[in-house]
Image 1: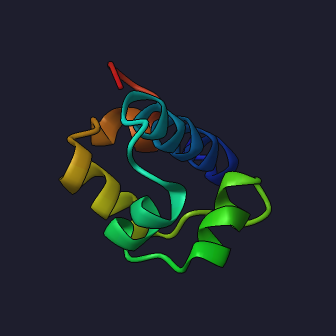
Image 2: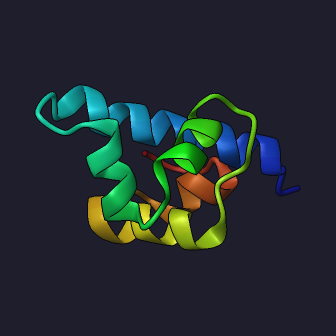
Image 3: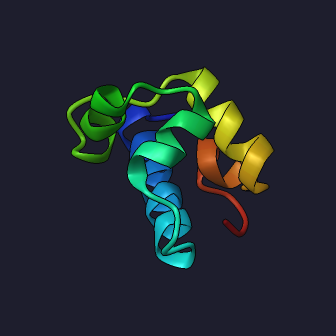
Length: 77
């Protein structure tokens, strides 16, 4: 079963991975790359708002995350 909370938690994990592996990249710059307003991005990172499909699609397209992992929790990140 697909669970929005699990998808959002994996999305946050993916975003944190990007930020940790690219110390030169700010949260606001990443938000801009993903097409998300900084305030909404902050809400997603603080688990107060779920990431939308457009944000998840951009995350996978720009940073090559495994969509099966992100959406279903299957396979490697």
